[in-house]
Length: 508
Image 1 (cartoon, helix red, strand yellow):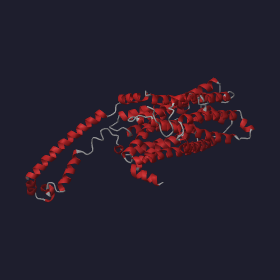
Image 2 (tube, one colour; image 1 turned 90 degrees about the horizontal axis):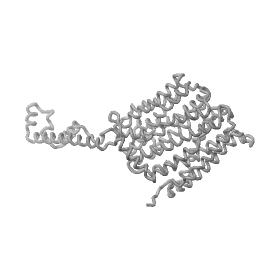
Image 3 (cartoon, one colour; image 1 turned 180 degrees about the vertical axis):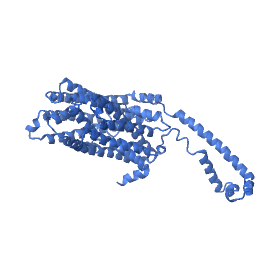
Image 4 (cartoon, helix red, strand yellow; image 1 turned 135 degrees about the vertical axis):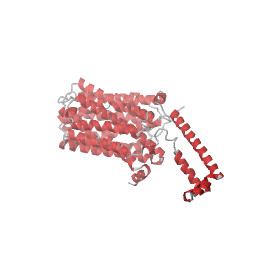
């Protein structure tokens, strides 16, 4: 834990508290979303397709992440670019969960529920973008060599939050009302909000015109006085202990008059320089139009647009049936909430295993090969759900819980084989100057693809007439999902042939 101590000394405890609270909340929200799933299924009696539609709609704010980055960069609030946006985002996260927990009618209507969940996702996505920018700025401003450790701490906080949130979600659903779960989770955005009050925004280097003003005129005068005390202008040095006549004589001394003239001249020049720097800072400050133009110029490059298009297709072409499978596991197989929470913990373990295997064995492998194998593997894993849905696993002597745990671990590990190179590759092809915004756009493309996938899954479930208790056509839906998983393999030509998980070279 020594590295955490080094981070605390380098970046300050308030900054680390804010960052860890935000990432922790991102992971721990699995607690609240398990409550949302059971609320829609058991209290609102929504069909699987309707529940998935509500979920998909509420997550739309994650598909426009670059807008939050552009606004925080270009539209300062009270001269600050980060902390005010974090305050706004924390309030947007806190209030909806508080209302859902305290006001019964807010969670008794799917319309109110959708609106409140969308608002809190808007706040969560904004906080995610802003804190990512703060982490990058602090790493660059303070000690660049700690950038990796700072990112590791962020992901560690999110991983532990996800694990504990999954465990707590299963236990809480057996012991608490859904309203209590929502109220409990509301405390985390509140901690996030309170953390903003303890952070010195000026240390982040993101206030408007901050680089222009280093010291005030008064501080400059004090600095000049310090120089005189060290030997320059001894005629004024001892005036505090002299008599009034001595003081007047000292002030009338030619050397003192010359020093005062030099000080006055320096003050005027300093003010003029500060004003010029302020004007220059205003002129060079990013604008929304300029940021959008830069983003467009970057995206239209084939080296950026083609891979981005493939990632969008690879996400959106595959209908997501996760909510439908949740209904089948709870209503048909009768798996309880605590076990489903445990399965998510195993899923987090699979995710970490996938990260380890990728870093040690796959970084130098061609991305085309990785993505091809990943999608083939995901198609096979998807088809294995047919065994579960048709109950063949029980005839083969495989208990339902063992099957679900194995599928969760392996599925998340294989998905990580795709997500890790996606992150690396996205960073590689970002042009200098707009790396943060373009990377946020890549993540938004991934989120948008996931949202489209969820809408497609809801439409497929509705077309197959899958309901709260009727899952007769679920096997057919899974076969369609598996077939769609193979479609992105046909478009791998959009990914540069020479790209790997470590480096990208251009044949130009």
